[in-house]
Amino acid sequence: MGIVKCKTQQKGVVLITALIMIIAVTGIAVSLMSNSTIDLKVATAAQESDIAVNLLKGDSERSINQEIDKKELSRFLFMKGQFIAAGGEINISESSLHSVVKLYDMNKGPMLLGCPPRIAVTIGVKCNTLRVQTQLQYGKGNKHNIVLQSGIAQQLGLVGKSL
Image (cartoon, rainbow, N blue to C red):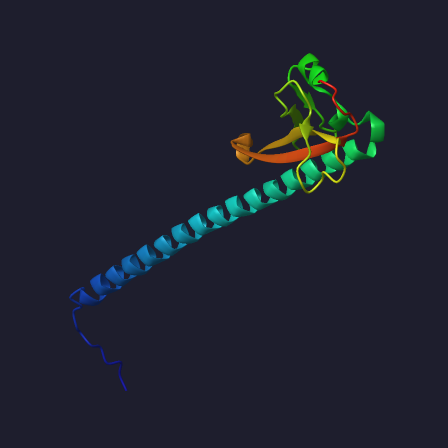
């Protein structure tokens, strides 16, 4: 038995069809990979934002609780003159915090304000109205900034005294 040789010439149609299919599949793969990269970046940014919000809230609560624990030395009891002497704001950040926490006096008038109805249980008790601002920069190169504002009405036992 001899070897049978077939002499057929290939015209290149199969080769060209295969190349077109490879290019199409490669295009689909590239578009899927770029979409998944964008999805990954968006998911990472959302996670960074959530982490920053949680750090910010925690730092704010920690600073407020640390001031409350100081009892009579708490800066929540500062009067208007003490805020003016400090430049209008007092930094109450602790070194272990990730963000900057500042305290502002919101009582712009000459007399102490009455307490909000939820707090004012005794006639003559006045409140020191304050704002706690917590600010955190996050992200690559600290490009993003997030700020939390908290209001505080600190009861004072002073009747008829000016600030």
